[in-house]
Length: 250
Ligand SMILES: [Zn+2]
Image (cartoon, rainbow, N blue to C red; front, side):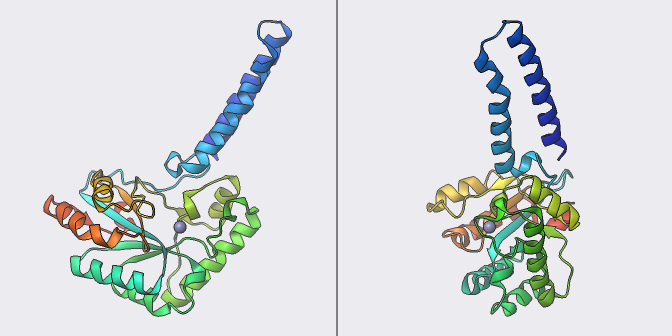
C-alpha cells in the first residue's frame, strides 16, 4: 500500500493547491480535474504492472548477482499439457515453479504429485482464477485463495507459501488479502506472452531478453511454449545459467 498511499496523498495536496489557485483566478476550472485523472491513471498502471509494487510488494526478480533463472508456469494442472511439460523439464534436467489453479486439481492429483516428486516448487494462483477475481471484496479474495491453498496442500502435504495473483493484477483488496494470509506475492521480470505469441521465433526472442536473476512468466497451455523451451534452456545452460525454483533466487 506504500506507493499507492503516497501517490494518493501527493495528489490530494496538489488538488488543494489547485483549488486555492483557482479561487485566486490564476488557473481555469478544468485544472481541478487533473489530479483525479492522474489518480485513475496511477491505479490502472499500478494494477496492471505487478513489478511496480504499487499496491503490494511482490518478489519479481533476484537482486543477487548469480547466473540463476526461475521458470514459472501458471494455470495448471492441465492433464496432458502439464505432463508433457514435466517430461520436457525432466529431459532438460531443470527445476521450475508451478502456480496452480485450485479448481483444476480435482482429477489431476497425480499431475500435482508428479510436479512435487520431480523436485519442482508449487505456489497458488487462486482457486477460481475467474475474470471477476480483481473485483472481489477482501473477504471473498481471502476465501478463494484459502480454498486454493487447501486444494494444493491436501495433495502435496506442504504449506503454500507463494501466491501469484490471477492475470498479475493487484489492487488494495488483493494486497490486504495476501498480506493477511501471510503469503508472499510472486510477480515476474520477463513476461513471455506465450499465451498470445504464435510465432516460435518471436517467443524465443522475448525469452532471450532474460538476464541473471530473472523470473519468467510462462503457461502450461502456451501454444509454442514446449516447442521453444529446449532451445532456450540449452542456449542459457551453455552460457552458464542454472534454472532454479523461485526460492533459490530469494
Ligand atoms: Zn493465470
